[in-house]
Image (cartoon, rainbow, N blue to C red; front, side):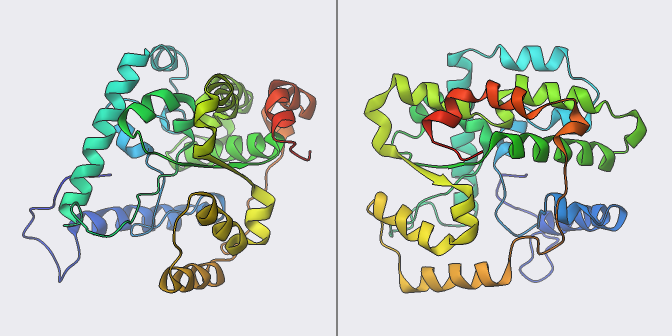
Length: 283
């Protein structure tokens, strides 16, 4: 959210004042809408998606959650050229460098890797690889019908959290945005890039979401083996502890229904037909 070194004198102990600020904002959100934790849990000091780094350069993935502008901004954003997205990723990288510098980790001698999670990357793999030529990709796949319903419900919820009248939210418009905007899924765009660039196939590992949920540590070991990485005992123990302390639906179950958004299962599966077939997704 604020990828610059903290120079503030207003620390309480070792606590960064920016962390306190965002924690207060999240606490306020959870007080107003407690089920937000079940829909999309965010913690101020936990890992999160990196789309905020794009927000800082005018590419707002979350614009549809907080504004009524589903037209002109989207048209502008989707017309960004390859060169413009390459520049965006150069700025993305500079922000990560600032974050590492602020943590005194930029010259860490070990072989730790940054892990980024963001669906927007799937639509711009060429630009991403220009900035990060040694990038590796963990691609999790799931029935697009479930993804569409969950994503639309998420968008609806965060519009409500921004003060929108729930009755005034155009649910069918949310459904159309999901199909129109690759930022929300990116599967078809990623598949097209991989088909056009078979030489990068070794950079990808494809993981069934259901397998990840059912046996996360088995999946982790497979990822490390695929990319020739060493999983230390300390790392494994931390992961196992995290899995134990954070079971699925820890804060309640996120319930959603595709029909609420003017979409049908046939429509979604036709839209993602090639993607479903390529990864043999069980629908």
